[in-house]
Image 1 (cartoon, rainbow, N blue to C red):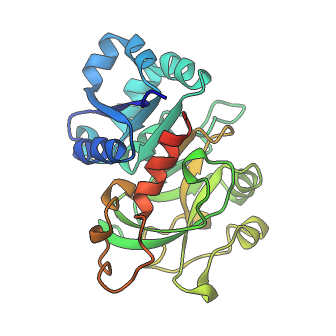
Image 2: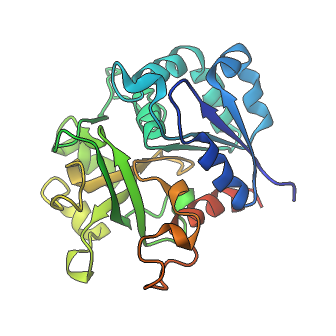
Length: 272
């Protein structure tokens, strides 16, 4: 089988595109970094790729809000091309700032009947930039990128990563429909966040800081669309693709294969 081709979309301020392209290449794909201006000129370029990834960073300096400007460009100029791309059984991944972009562009979660977004990402409860490793639980079997994974450790690095929905009823609905794919958890069996307790009362199962580094409702760290082929997450899988990336790599053997690399391998193996 030919290697799948990945388009890593970058914009002014994006600073994780090189690492993300490298991660996909380590997983067996062919990755190409492309500036948003080139894609705006020729949206049909998407047809040459099997995976679209919007990486982390600070697109347009997050001057209006994190990911907002790039999200507006996509919504007003590229939404039709991206929908066509997705309908051809392609994959879309948004990491950190990319998650913010996909969510605010209305690509991951469809708007409500009035056309209003049901969820967004906003400032961390600490009102500051959080840079730390977190424990994560996979709570939906729908997401292509998370197949075969139950728990993860990945680093986060963001100031606007708090996942919020309009009200608790919407959160419960997202959980029930399988859109909530990844949640922050506390370390150890006693603090494990399971699919069962999240589905029962998601707005009350609050994992405390720093394990939930931003105060996300329902401890949400990542969501997927109804097909499981569009996935956005706040943690950075591209920063854990080698065992030496983990701070305990000399003292613990649980990190081989590296957790972030598994996510990229899942994306590549989807096309085998």
